[in-house]
Image (cartoon, rainbow, N blue to C red; front, side, top):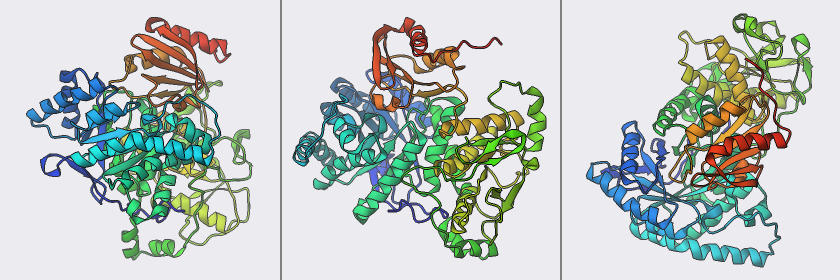
Length: 602
């Protein structure tokens, strides 16, 4: 199986077109070679028509091309008629997507008024009970028949009205049936979506796209790769567009880094026809990040056709290398390397954590501020290390298997391509030397804006770490010494390689949210952001499923208006806690499970 033509050359996946609304009157076309479409979601109550209209207009004003609105009940779905009518009366033709979970009858009502309906296969026709059951083939077939009976009416209605559809799987809400047959895996995500796609196709409905969202960038990347490979296996007419997103990415730098790793990696491999960056912030902020992220792709890739036409010796050498794939794209495993010693007793490679290296200039800036107990600190100085710098487009030899290697500055290749090629050529030589990753192959004459430096470093280093490549990292694109050091650690945390601080899974807000996510997230962080290695999920409701908190230690989840449920892992432990008490009770729960430490005095 293969999810893209080449891990070294960018070639956008060819898909059929999905039409959302009337393109002549403000609708959009997704896929078919059209530019990647950016979208977001409003956060207010769907029954508040005025607020829904205003938030939609605010998104459109900053360049949002599709707006999603939740429809948790038939009543909410019916009010989409009023929202859409008001928008059209104001001259706003942006396509509206109804976000549906649990209630097929709400989907049927929403399809009357909006251009697209999003369904989640994990909870459209199923209710998750974490039941463990072995299904015979006959029982499984009976379950599929039941799903078909529930889903087919919506398919036929969308076909009749000219609507589009997103079949959007969430890692956190896989059904018990899927979990029991395929496990809590990317494969389960793919099979869940394909079940619904087969029903659509059986009714000759093809105006749909897929998504495979997870709060874990590595799971998300693996899910999309596997989906695209499976679609290619099923045949050329399964070339449906893809919507990319890391769900519950969080806020601030952490949310942007997680999204850049997941979305950016796939964009650079030619996947993705529409994207959303899900931030626990005001929705218009998401659009700017989408735009900035898309702008990096041409700068971080080499187009397949352009490479064929290139006359440079470097390009020809690279194209002639015919290097093998340097990693398994469908099952993450870290590239095996020997353990080696860096300076100061720090070890790298083998089973060691991924190390953070800095330049001498950065060391000089940050060293006076480092305290003995600090977790964020340099673990090596680049100029002092014995690093073998290699041009992977040319032949090379390595005489020492414990030699730390990296790509030589100035190589005429995009960074991701260069490091993948280095790993592949080392593999062909039978060498497994530890690799030092860089976010750029040289210093730029003009320093990058911090927001761009963050995105580029996250896409480059995060993509390679998700491939399993890399034993140490060096961030140079961020000009600030302290900022570059912090960015390196944040990328490692987002990629699941290290844990040096509290990790948060926080959903963006929507009309289902049962408390103010931004305010509560800030309140929880103020109490818990010193808990190194503890992961806390903050969710306005449980719509994406407790599985989204599978690797979180604790969960703070809206259960009813003004009431909070607290989780330990996937298990709800305390119910209907008044919101005013809930943060204190969360802290108590952390203490009960021996995960609490008192913060150090300033």
